[in-house]
Image (cartoon, rainbow, N blue to C red; front, side, top):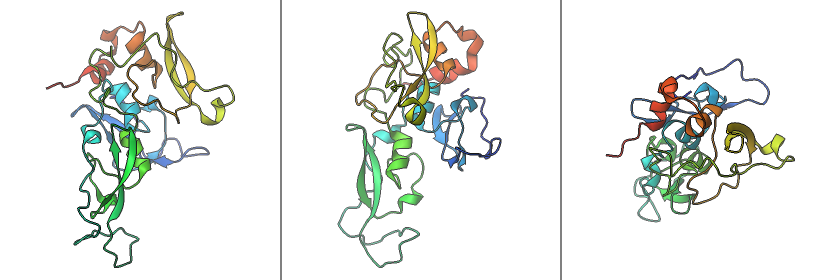
Length: 241
């Protein structure tokens, strides 16, 4: 799931209801989730590919977030005007006003606007600066000061007896729901439910929320870890140096 993946650009044709998007995978070399170099046809996490870094991290890295999301904004402007300005591709003016960019404020758990004299479309991966709030949220959204380091034993990230997080009402499921899994302790099984994730709770610590059934079974169920060595290695291999 984390190491076995299908990242082909066009998976079985990008048909109705599907589209090309920036996606993320787990990199077993540096033990982090990172962006694929080109957009691919959107697909589910069962292919080892994730729509955002958070869902990749809670599935593959023990929930550890990118360190850059907890830094200050990347190369902010020092003044109201730029002595040297990198222009956006569509900027045909002679304006010296800074460009607009976004960074992730882990304290407020929001992507916030700031100004830079650099071209935010050319920011490298691994900095706290983004061309648009959408990409800021895809990379840093839902990480906070409580979950930034993940959890090697998962005790402070996973609560196997909690209610499923952000369960949709029956009316919301079809249009807004994302298929997720929770551990039902009363029947000792992982079960599918639909989560409406627009109002993600701030300051969240441990939860009963999983992107795949397999990750739910590994965390809360009766999966034998020796039979799932790759997933366990990806999930647990956190570096606390």
